[in-house]
Length: 326
Image (cartoon, rainbow, N blue to C red; front, side, top):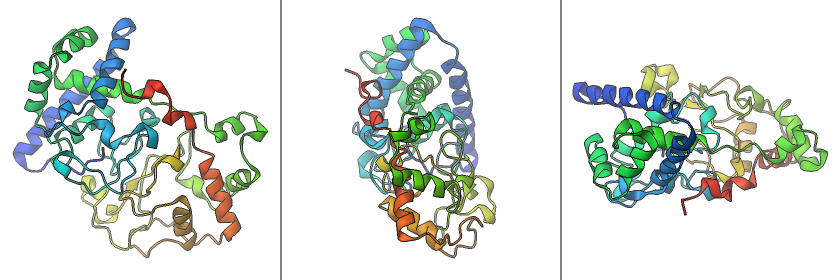
């Protein structure tokens, strides 16, 4: 789930520092266990990911906003959390999230362990306090024994975030038609998709921001999708006016499964997204200079959309290892 929470004021700052320290310890714990414990840790993380137990109303899990059928997004413009409360951002995909160095749309977390604490404690998402989380886990009929098996300790924030992060790092997808075409399978992409790929890396210049294995530079940009930005974006962290409305470039992997698009779900289709960039975007004062009219024809827009659809790996939505535990 995407969260807009920030730690403001002395008390919130102290809580934030404590949570950050716990998350850093969780990151170390995520990488420290192998063998049987590694499998137990992964399966525990999967169970927790799909369990609404860790929400204030008992109705919202991580999987509520990160659904496998939608490449671990939720199909909504913004996410709905506990008690029907809504946030202000779209849920980003978790596929290949292990490769990302900046999490949340504004880039506010450097690790999955720290990221997990955001939605768990955000008022509009799962809405629990750190103390409530630990208490609920220790009172659960089966989780204490599972934490003991996976981590050799009773449930705490460190082991909780380590378990969740372990499962999320297992959500790997590099078997789209584009991957097979790149590996030499000439028939993997249609002629339209191949033409679209050429546009992507040439006339349309998408590659400047959408590059690397995950087709994201992991950097904040203002893509001129709005005339004025009510959501501060990266400026939430930096406090700088020039960063208002800048958001981390999302991956294009499985993009056909993750509509609607943009940080607040303001565009419904891939064609609408391409048309936005082709027109040069809105005249936002912080717009990235790369966002300018492209001069694509209608046929070229269709070809570019075909290429974007060739980035979908259909096995993501059906892989039983990514789904809820049996």
